[in-house]
Length: 346
Ligand code: AMP
Ligand code: MG
Image (cartoon, rainbow, N blue to C red):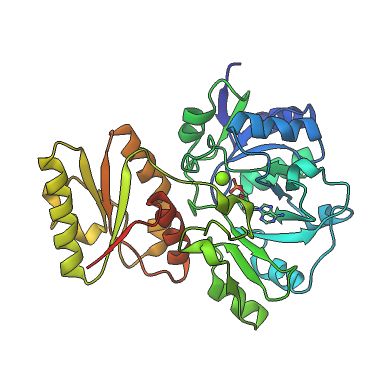
């Protein structure tokens, strides 16, 4: 199959994508979080082909994307608190779990009683969803286990020959997947942190918001994953990533010593550091993760940087960390998983 890339802002390209969705085909499309690999959520066969194209385990459910709230009608019921959060954060990078009806195929939810739904905010994504008029099931448009794509070129890297069309909307603004929030089990619980932060949700609801246990550590062998995706190794470059945490001077010294020691032993090694530290680490092939004062910038660049490491054939990578607050929590969840949570404290 030949994979075309077309401009996400062209009405002809959007019309073609909508036609492909109605015929049960897959389309890669941009959102403000990451690129999605979409199919008609009500078409079982089409949904199954998402799993095949990604190499995704069947027990990892998908997120359903809508452009207007009327589309919820008949698909699900609305848990307490959800309306308030929709008013505050939709359209935007917040996915919520809703008790579902039988209209949603089991393939979308991996047989779970809830369906994950969100309303993306990127204007071209909203137009696509409006023109096709269908709820679109879409996970991130990467091959399973690879970093999520934040450009059309990343999607091409992973999906060329597997899907007919990729809509190119440029770089994703947030750069990390949506926040996944469960309001169906009592205390609101973040299953996956993202661009809508715990602090923002707590303020809107006026209640405490819990975090799923495995956000900043590996899932224990006997622990049940609240969010099935948390069971899988994710976002891992081929090289070994190690996080270094502590006071600024000590961290810089450790990053440098580790990197140079690995090179002595013949390994390709580099560091991931803040813009402010590029100069201090100039002999360690520093990769800029953004300014230490701007966690949204770090989020925006993270997946592209991880993909870059593979292109460069890096074998060991030592990285600075951000405080796990605000969007920094989402950054540390993804970076932690890329590092299999290996951390050196200095
Ligand atoms: P992706 O879009 O590839 O980031 O994957 C969507 C993620 O949303 C999955 O890996 C799950 O962790 C989460 N998710 C989707 N549906 C549900 C659900 N019904 N219950 C819990 N988590 C879900
Ligand atoms: Mg994904």
